Amino acid sequence: MQQAQSTDEIDVEFERYGDGQPLILLHGGMAPTEYWEPVIPAFEGYSAVVPQRPGFGTCLDSPAETSADEVLAREGRYVRALTDAVDGDPILFGHSYGALTAIEAAAALSVEAVIAYEPAVLPAEYRADADLADQMASLIRDGAREEAVKRYIEHVLHPDGIDDLDAWLADWPVWPDCVDLAEEVVRMNRSVEQYQLPDRLNVDAPTLVLAGTDGPDFLRQSARSVHEALPRSRFVEFEGVSHSGPAEAPALIAAEVDTFLQN
Image 1 (cartoon, rainbow, N blue to C red):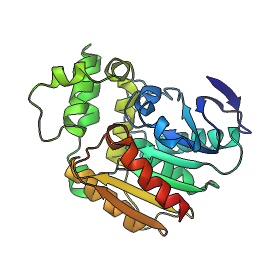
Image 2 (cartoon, rainbow, N blue to C red; image 1 turned 30 degrees about the horizontal axis):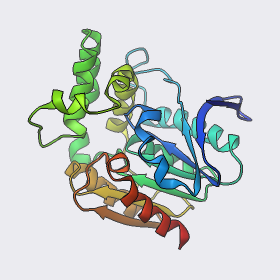
Image 3 (tube, rainbow, N blue to C red; image 1 turned 135 degrees about the vertical axis):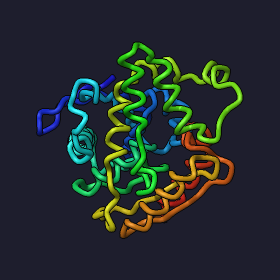
């Protein structure tokens, strides 16, 4: 684990793999290091930078009315600290909430490009009734941490239902670490539920927005909306790939990313 301090005196910790242009991998509501393990070998030509992000506080010990802008501003400062810690203009590759963070942070940073897999943005009709953060927070307060994270998985990874969730989780390598990150997942969901996509995202860097046909329909819809709000964007949808696309089909996604970055 490498440690560094930015010009803003923000301490960052990250693991770095390989040589080449820095590729900063920003996780969503998953265990940070473990989630990207299947992805890193697919990007041999880059220097994969996997941050160990601090908890930043959660909706359980910070006011529920904390705005999405405030949460994203904190995330953006941390991403800026990461870019200060690496040489040259990096590429930001974010998944889910990490994709939203990458896009928002890139508006104020000099980066080579942004890769965003199913940014965690809710269409207006979903946002009006969204209460996943409240459901999870209530379960955690009752001591049901595993049930809280299961609720997240049921809503985000398996919105159409799953026959045996416990069996699926038993084969999911990041499951124990996700339980440890329950409060951070709540905080992210609180931010997502409050975030409203602007008509235009002021990101100068070229951006590749990705989605999978087997993920939640609302995230596919939002991915297209994010693409349309970006001035320099390409949209690609993968047949038969879920919301866990980067870890589920790393070679397929890496090939598309390479094509995008080389053009």
